[in-house]
Image 1 (cartoon, rainbow, N blue to C red):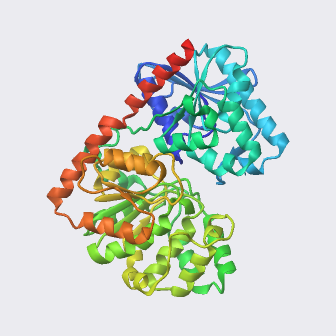
Image 2 (image 1 turned 90 degrees about the vertical axis):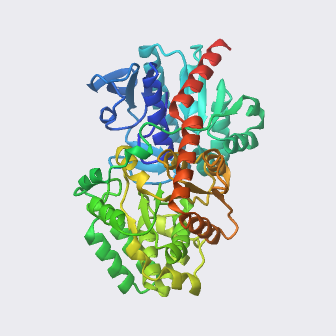
Image 3 (image 1 turned 45 degrees about the vertical axis):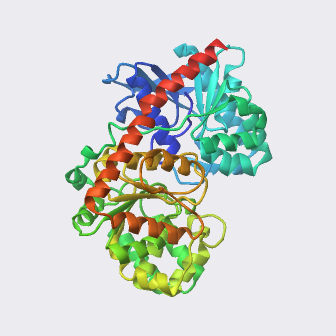
Length: 516
């Protein structure tokens, strides 16, 4: 299997991690090429190698409790990590695919293709599974030429939306790679439709394979708030950054100065680890009265967390709710500033932040989408910053012990998503997840919401208002009724979206491809 990235921090990373764990759990042997720096810290990985051309260096090995086997290989790619959406990766020089020179792209393709060939010869693998439409399928096509080994391609959302659809060069490369795939696997019916729009000639080879979630890890009984007490210390965000942000809001004399101050704060800590006082603040939030709403995901404009903050102001005013935001991303300081400005009635900075918009995450200037400043919003938001906590990223073992404490979850993306994996994890934990009514999120919400007397997808017209209304109606229901709905979403997830189901279907498709 090829992936090219890590095991955490994004939906596709988590997807690959869990898929490999399920395959190993079912007794299969998996040889995974990716750039995860510490794979042996994951319970399903047996061995870790670096591969440079045809040379292999063993970096570590151990026994696992799984009946199958997973070996991870880090291809040597020269220190340059191409990505779909820009973010910082410690130890890497990062560029988006759209910013790569022709030479950098060809070097990346050649090094990875050489690594795939070497691993194939060493492992004797019978089939290859690629992840992402660019450049995984093209690398597999080049590496497998003349071997007779088939490959299947799993298409995640970011590669098409952020790269291929914005560049004829990458659209052509995606087509070239996918044309050689025995099957193209989409993570939702929406995603399958998107692939058919871009590559109509490949529609008959494209199937929907939604899922999956680790329903043994994410379950209502996993709740253990005491385990979160250990989330302290480290190199994450802390009180100094909160003080610096408050100072920036007080002293900035314009949008440029405010943006520069926020960027300086973002550079002062390690965004990929939990906040230094995350455990203490989570504990305080859990001990407070009122229902708990949770968001888990990247902190970038397209995920719609700014819309959630606007909606939450109204929800809190009517229900006394609290909000926990888990995740990292280049938009975090902008969101933190937005939260404080809302809660303190700082209309001047609120207008500045709304105007800066995507510039706050390092993108191009443009106002916040699905966000409108109004007197009604400012009245509802008074004091809300005291009931909203941003705590940085929590990874699956920690997250599973926290999610069941939530009374509702929200996946408010304003940009198309391949599938709502976070919605499935929330539902598996017994948390009713409200999702934006579009793309793969709609499909995820529909699957986990079967049998509920209301819809989980929330319409995008007047999104903030509709989202607030959906949350208020749910959180105002009697506890007994909400508990019944918790059981329903859990049962739907186990039945339809478990990783074991997904892994078994993938193996069937790989065997079919061998026979073609």
